[in-house]
Image (cartoon, rainbow, N blue to C red; front, side, top):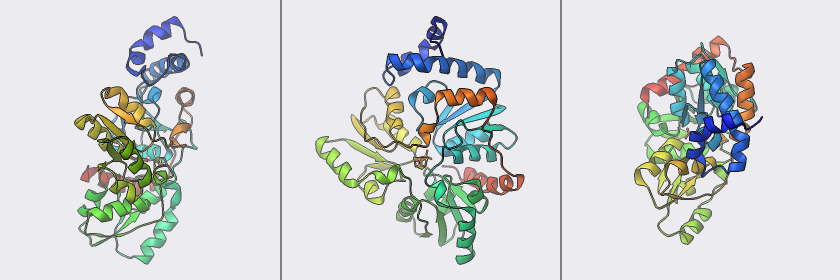
Length: 329
Ligand code: 13P
Ligand code: SF4
């Protein structure tokens, strides 16, 4: 696509904002897509929802709403748009469809999965329920609709402890993230039965890496996502969902910070926090990175890659997400 003078002028305000994250040469490739996508989404009354791990040209260039998975689910329920384009992974698009079943939900690349979501099936949950009868099931939102359909209430990293406590039970099955389960167990008296799922991005971080960075950067603040191993959380100053981490940086304005999470977060947040120095440990989520501007334009143009689910699954899975939304953050 050609980077014409008209496109250059029309996209200049966006580039001004993100020029620190994107070199000029790269901008000439992104800008024509950003221009076309922004035009097309207005014409089609489409909304673009983007997870915090999307790259800066998506996060700052075309997204109408960028957030963590809880806020994306709530926004999907409230939007007045006819089409939702989910710039995130498959379970996020499915969750949007559950919350807005009458809307067309598109995912620019259907292969954008998640190691946590892939770690468990609906059948696995049915077997667990047989093994632990009458024990409520809490599932992380990073699960398929089939798993959500077997779940009493969903949670995200932003509200996991609150959801578990809200059940008033002395035992809870908590799926599928083993590390998040350990984190929740450390924050509550409820007995937690966990599953062996992990996030392939966050499990790579180690406390040794954090301690080395602390030695070389005195006074650095280290903030981690709860999907990290427990040792990493212990070695950090704060743990929270992706939006919780962003809020921490915004509110505290540390001189130096290390975000122990997916790479693009630091790139995106640096733009709004120019006085904060980000030390970047770089672990990429290969699934999130499948979403690109050309794929977004193509799927919006042709309205392909639509999320389709049976009415029965929608009805059952939706209940667990609605219960989560009622409890809130
Ligand atoms: P958040 O809900 O914190 O945005 O996390 C989603 C996710 O996939 C993190 O790896
Ligand atoms: Fe899944 Fe981890 Fe990627 Fe998040 S970062 S989408 S949990 S694989």
